[in-house]
Amino acid sequence: MSKTNLHANRPLSPHLSIYKLIPTMVMSIVHRITGGALYFGTLLVAWWLIATATSETQFNLVSWVFSSWIGLLVLLGYTWALIHHMIGGIRHLIWDTGRGLEKHTTTKMAIASLILSIALTILIWIAAFTIL
Image (cartoon, rainbow, N blue to C red; front, side):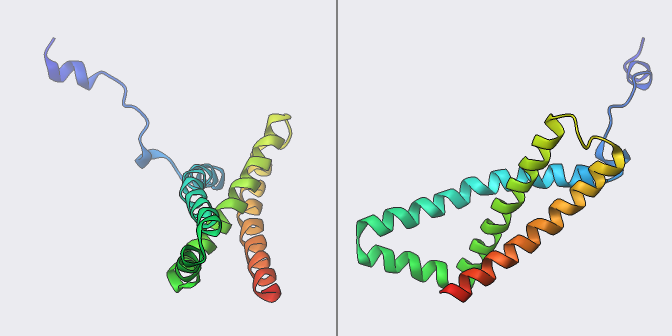
């Protein structure tokens, strides 16, 4: 059997081009991405804590970085990633109990997790700037 016939008769593996993106798939991917982003954000929290314990100069440097527009943008993203990952974890815990596994329910939960994470992030930032 020639090499071309061997490959022609084999079934094709599923590929991203044949999948239709659905909310649960997108939220699963985003959940994994936010989990990875939390590693980076935790390094920033550790940097802040170490600077706080080290000296006033180091603390002022970290405060300056975090209060710049890019620092605030990174902190906003970290806040959203933390909230979104937490809500995604709660969604997975609900699924672990065997509840909410119907197709329409999983779609509603995926959309709700995105909306809730954005809303909670906004509320946290409003509270932070109101108190400070």
